[in-house]
Image 1: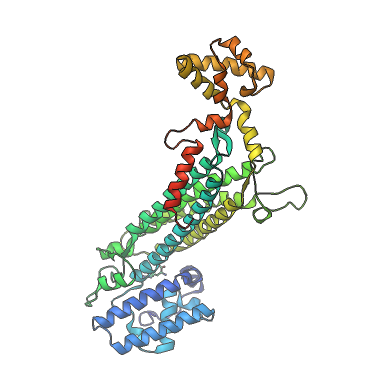
Image 2: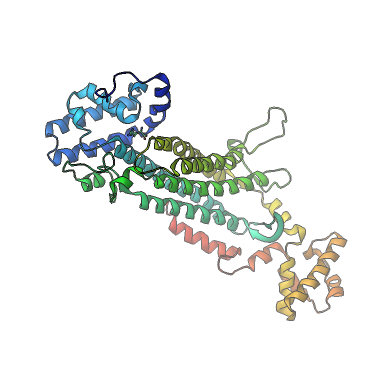
Length: 457
Ligand code: ARG
């Protein structure tokens, strides 16, 4: 393409390090959309003829068809997706192809393509997060009063409801979705028409191409337009945070499906067997989702370091922006899909969850609160009395609600029969009716709220 200035072919090594068609062919669709918008604008502004515009449209449609059918002759000699498409266009329509690049450079072209690609993927994440939220909501709705142990430090703390636990993740994924939406808003400006770095003397209409490509407006500074990759960094940051949420839920599923916990079971669809141990059912999908955060964080680190210290405007370093984003987004997308499937597939083991909730004196706080409320005891004293009663229960090998009233009265004579109304895990959870609390009545309210917010669920 620049034969006028160079006489020798690039060395093989030069080509090896320079070529990007192996990965940037993923931008083909966005590249064609950008070229169509640019060509229409050039024609409207009288920069190219209507005939050239018609030829370019026809030629790009043909290129698009060839790519869809898998017959497009991608070539390393043509370096990247932009030159591959332009080269093929020239073969298809001849001279008009050469006019497409008027008032445009690969610098604004690639910045436009990549923005469109990232934006398309952000929309896809939004839809995927909604499905995952739907799956969590269905579990929550089915288990508003399924009692399970709530943990702090992974030690039994207080009984909670399974629905409440599901909704905690739903809230996290809702924030992830809104983070992607914020990112989309900020990034939705068009680089097209910034040309190489300084703009162009042709009477182009950047508002027109921006609107045609669904951007809110053109970027206001041509140097920034070709140099900015913070949209990709921001999208990767959102992806990394979302991946940490996925990894936390994955970790819980791994723990919950273990023989020691048996809190939930997964079907064959989301587990694998062991080649040597016939009894095993491994939560591989959860483990892999848990691990994906590594490559996603890695991509964010890689691109941050590529961008650090780059002078304005375009530098070829920036060709290294794509692979980390492609890889990270594919990983997140797969993780979101698999998690939605796994959550929908999961069956909580109610009996086991209830047993576990009553173990380890998880209603001790309720006993202390009862002493405060009914006997007007200072909380510190109530904490001490409860500790003594827990020790007694432990000695007798009983749960708190199985301990005899007379035994409790040896520690605090003013305790009455009414205390048993707070000692069962269900009573404990049901009493937590503060806003956002775990009581089934509160969880039902939140389920109703989310059903309105997620009409498709
Ligand atoms: N393949 C290049 C990239 O991804 C396109 C831009 C090339 N621009 C240039 N001035 N060499 O960054």
